Image (cartoon, rainbow, N blue to C red; front, side):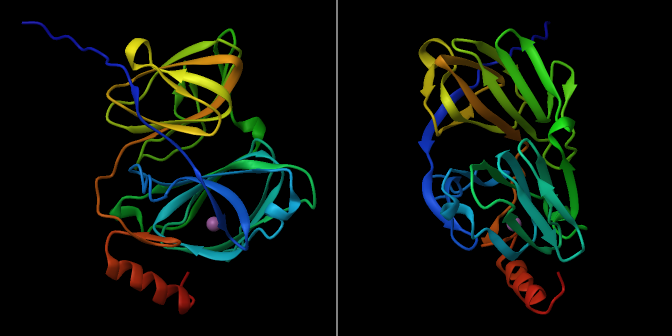
Length: 286
Ligand code: CO
């Protein structure tokens, strides 16, 4: 009798591009997850990429709005954004900052640009919470750029570890509910990197600079700039940059396998809970 464990290869099971969207008071962005093409990738409910040099695309910002039942994760690449909530929390996100906000039972906050010109670029990811934690207390995990460790597993590969572990380098985010991985991977031209994703997680790679190939041999799939690859089939993730290098986020999380009832900024398990969220918000209980 023998016990062998084999690691199978993750490959791209689906490729797609985001669609133009407008949110907040008219901020232009690209919605990559949370669209008719890809409603969600459990536990990920939404992925927005924002990136523009035009102030008119972002100046309106995201004035006061509520959230309940999930987490919003903001990763700034360029620009400065100030957030404030109705519980007295306030902070400034600068290039390289991460804010992992657990909305729990609810808060009302604003996210407004703290600049009148220049480039604004980054991502917002929405991560679902299990039923048992949807009504928990709101919580922030917020980290300045120098608190995000960088792993350099080999020449030409640099990984900012926001969540998860790369070669012993552990990211600062703690979230046992979904055990997330969130990596910002920079690859020099033609550089390749291999990484083991947690077993059973749903995962995606999104290229935001240059181009890369995910998988090997017959399974290799090209992802050009602003392409999302949904990963499946295994844990061994292999990526190789094209001739101009590549930068991508690699994100994975344990699926919750729970019913999702969502309406705008409320993500619950049942329609009744969403209705209750509206009532609680209107009656000032956030
Ligand atoms: Co928000």
